[in-house]
Length: 168
Image (tube, rainbow, N blue to C red; front, side):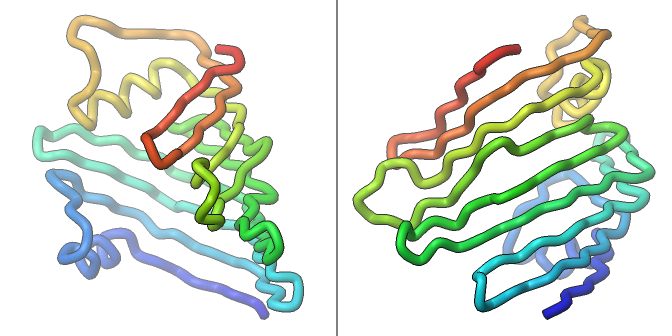
């Protein structure tokens, strides 16, 4: 089963405004999704392209990214009751590169870990600070330059969120 979709971010934000609080942020751009769903294998693989992304806040801050692309894969294991993230790769001018090494959503009631992932992330520090600034989270009087690289584990458990850096 082939899936193709085009989503206008401003239209989606407008339509979802009653369900999601977007705060003082406005999104622009277009998301194009192409995927293959194979029901017999319980898998979904595809690509997504974010074209002309733009994020603005009520203080006049703007982040723009002319082109981001992502490839992804999902597979549900009925016996393990897990939705595996079989692949995820994101490349973005502003966000950098993210590569999933391992990941799954856990649907077993007896397990504490509800989501587990390990990923590599690389980005320009200046871009990370731009993102922090647009959300009002950048420390004052601090700027950064250079490359940021990490291998990190992200775990969501019943008792909270755990972030473990393997190397940074």
